[in-house]
Length: 373
Figure 1 (cartoon, rainbow, N blue to C red):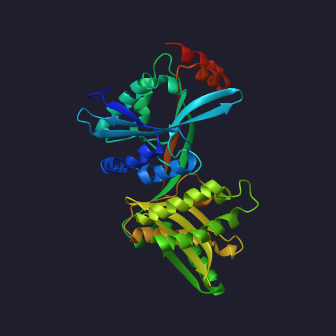
Figure 2: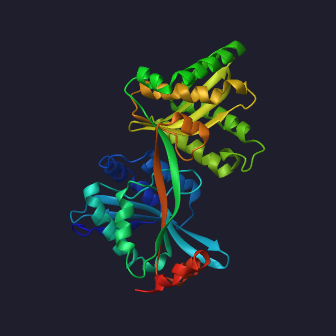
Figure 3: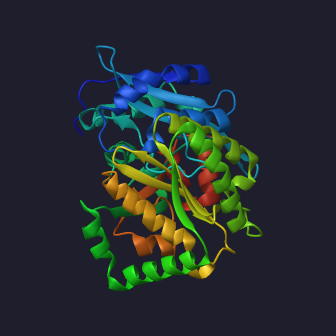
């Protein structure tokens, strides 16, 4: 593996240090094509303020020989227990509770080999006693990060494994609405028209879109209500049943609306919201983040599907190239999508007693390998 000149790794370990990284973080992202909204400083810093405690941040920063920031590994450290075993786990920021997708180490592709080589060296020298397992969650399957790390870990005494996969249905948009509608097929077009007619017979129908901070803040409360109506009485109780999750989403929708990246779309019947979508637009992609609908409001008309169809056409009109339906593949997402993006969750083990003990619990066959060189 050709890595180029070694990079200097430094760590940011506090919220204050994280906050100060905003300008450099965003400048680096401007040079990294194809990254997702979930790698922006806004998303990850907001997540950290709501979900991390003191001493958990472990953001690793890579500098070249001219002291330029060329790479970021956005990690945090948590301690988790399996029975009597306490394990220190390095993970991507944002990789718990809020369904962040497409997480990764940040670097331009020419710098990626040197970044991963330098991270690997740092983790097994200066930081060796600080962690037991490294878990990279929701890493895009096409990312070079996986192959580069795997080449380094694939040595005697190093154990790694893919522990999960994620499917994100997406809609790759054509250049115009006419082509998009033709691609739906006659039966689906007829079905959408029939459902719209049914709703119009029930009363005045209106599609609304909130984008300004004040509008978004007001409309977001109705999306919370609609989402919770859908999930009342079901296991888990919906996203907003958890107070911390509700506070995070109220915060991030405010931050993203101030950046012009958030929107709340609603379908109103006689002025009353019966369906809503909370989503984000970033670099040519509309992220369909969270829907909600009133399950008692003319279910035969499928107001949630009608609103999604309307939002897809809005994305087309705005010149977006993709609608990403994000994690999970329920039938309604697969019905709309014309492609999928896949992510993997991979775990590697340090050569430590805690890592061995965890591996023995999970799969005794490979545990001994961790102790071998």
